[in-house]
Each structure stands twice: as structure tokens, then as C-alpha cells.
Length: 500
Image (cartoon, rainbow, N blue to C red):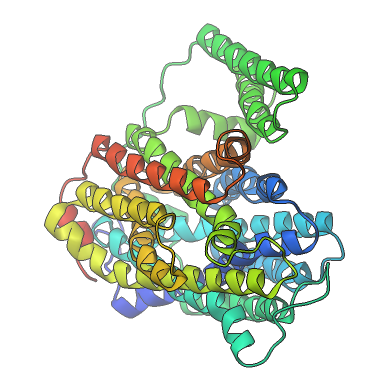
């Protein structure tokens, strides 16, 4: 087959199924992390005010790892392929972290293992996003990302339900102070096995196109480098660095919430990165990633705002749903009590529910896109998610919280698919990995901002009640939906939603 005379071949349903199946394992580990890490941290002695700082490992790791992995995977070609070596390495490292985390002897070891777990998941996850762009023609990419959303939903349902199911069958759901219950430990052990097995299936069942073939089939427009103005870049670097340092100094001198150090450090770090690149102090991968960031397509810039508000909301949900539901609906903040652990298990059920609804939504969303387009479909789903989060504050019967999860599930499935479908046709094949990694900046940065601000806002304005973090997240989700209307709609969006 001559790639210069033919377009990229369409894949069958089962070929797309096999190439996306590994996401079942990735999300199995990710869901165990999201539903149980706050519980593990609190069990090991963390105060609720400390949770955002402890969680900071996850988004910070993604900020560093994903663009680096994307950059190098674009340049990799081995007997195992281009992306698949990264799938394998990430899966093995994540499994080690999953086996060790519930046995952590101290809070800081658990925080370190969260860092390792998230880094390992990111090593596998970023190439999986680029994998869809590599393997599928433009008109099948929305289907590919929706298939990933389906496996994300299925994996998350099972993983989130595991502690609840194990407790139902008699596995101990409480433990002495400082010890993680057996329901959580055995769930993490199962997660390690599932993660390796699912990724191994994709590695064995799917082949990859070599880089030269992908470039011959490339349908994306060439990204023209933006003009470089050394003086302007230097001024921008100075402004970002000055604002970051000023914020750090203000937090120190005024004794503000220590979590605000994260925000100040993030701003200052970006200023330093601009300064280093502007002065050509560091070259190599760092320089190329910074240049790609500077030259990123306009569609990605528009989607950055959408992603910011979406992932701010999601991070608020992941951090605060367990303490909020345990406090508001089960009336306990004592991590050793039966009521708190019953509430924590119910949050696992709720997380399983929203991922189950996301799996259903993954089937429905391509039909929505065919009818209303990518932008309007994402707006509808984001508003449903925002209303779902806000409703948690007003519902008193915890069983009715399942209704809230319907909206969250549709938003989650949409966030995991439609922004990537909006983006992928504007990214060239030879930079698919690095741009998917850079796109992750706009997933990670809002999580860092959330970790910096939410604890401060709860303590100073909302009396320490975690439910208000979910309300803030719901409002943020609605704003994300409105911002998507600024994004260019790809030509022939109905083609993108067509079934394989």
C-alpha cells in the first residue's frame, strides 16, 4: 500500500476496540486513586485542610511527565512500535505503586506513592491519546475517543465499586487507627492485575504505523512558527516571575494559607521557563517543548480555557466528595467511625455510577454530535455536569445522589472525548504526541490552581464545609460549557461522529 496515494485506512469496530482496551486498565488504576486516596490520607492522619497539598503530586507529575513523554514518543520507533513501549513501562510502574500504596506506614510515604502512581499512569495515558490520532483517520477520531471514554467508564465503575462490594461479602471495612481497611487494600491489589492485563491486550493485538507512513497520510495544516520577539519574551518572563515572587512573599509575610505557595510557585516557574528559553540557556527537549507551546494552534488556545474550567471542577469533586458526603449525608468526620467509612464507600458507589453513566454517554455522544455538532454537544453535557455537582448540596437522601451522577457522567464522557476531537484535526502527525502532552497543561494547571485556592476559600469564606467546593466546581463546569462556543467547529463534524 502506497501511503502517498491513499488516505489513512478506516479501522473496523474490533480494531478500534482492541487499540482502546488498554484504557480500561489505566482508568481502573486512576479510579482507585480518585475514589480512595483522600480516604487513605485521612486514615493516615491528614487533616481535611491538608488534602489539596497532598494531592498536588498528581497534577504536578502530569505537568512534567506528559509533554516529555509526548516529545520522546514522537521520536521513538522500536520493534515494539512508537507508543506501545510507553504503555508497557507505565503499566509496570503503576502496578508497583498500586500494590504498595494501601500498605503505606506513614502519610508522606503514601503521598510519595501517589506521585509515583500518577507519573506511571501518565507515562501510559499520554501516548494512548496520541495513539488514536496516529491510527485513525479524521472522520473516525471522535469514535476512537468515545471508545476510550467507554472503557474509562467501565473500568471506573468496577474499580470504584470494589470496596463496597468487598464489604458486602464480609471483607473488613474498618481498621485500627492509622491502618487502611482490607476492602481498600484488596481493591488496589486487583487494580494492579487489571492494569497490566488490559494494557498487555492492546500491546499484543494492535500494530502501529511507522512515522514516515503517518507523515505521508498527515491531513493537518502545517503549523507556522509565530514571530519571535526576544524583547517581548523577556518582558513576559519578567512579569510572570515578578508576579509569582510577589505572591510567594505575600503568602509568607501575611501568613496566608500555605496552599497558596503552590499558585505562586507555578506562576514563578513559568516565568523562569520563559527566561531560560528566551535566553537560549537550555536547549534540547526543553527548548523544543517550549517552542511548540509558543506555536500551538489557535484551536488549542481556545480549548485551553474550556479545559481549565472543566478540570478545576473535576479536581474539586475528586478531592472533596468523600469528606463532603461523609459530613453532610452521613454526619461524621471521624475516619475510624463506621458512619464515615460507610459514607466513603458510598462515594465509591457514586463514582462508579458517574462512570457507568459516562459509558452510556459515550454511546450517545456521537449521535449528539451528528445532530448538534461538537460545540453544542459539549455545552449541553458540561451544563448537565455542573447542575449535578451543585445538586449534591440540596439533596439529603444519599441514595438520590445517584441522580446527580447522571449529569456528572455525561460531562465526564464529553470532557474525555469532544475536546480531543475538536483538537486532533489541527495537530500534525509528527507532533501528535508532544501536542497531546502540551494539551495536558490545561488539564494540570487548573488542578494546581484548585489545590491552591479551594482549601483557602473553604477556610476563609465557607466555614470549612467541603460541600461548597462541589458548588464552586459545578459553577466552573457551566462556565467551561459556555467557553466552548468560542472554539472553531471542524468541517464535517458529522463525519467525525460516524460509526466505524
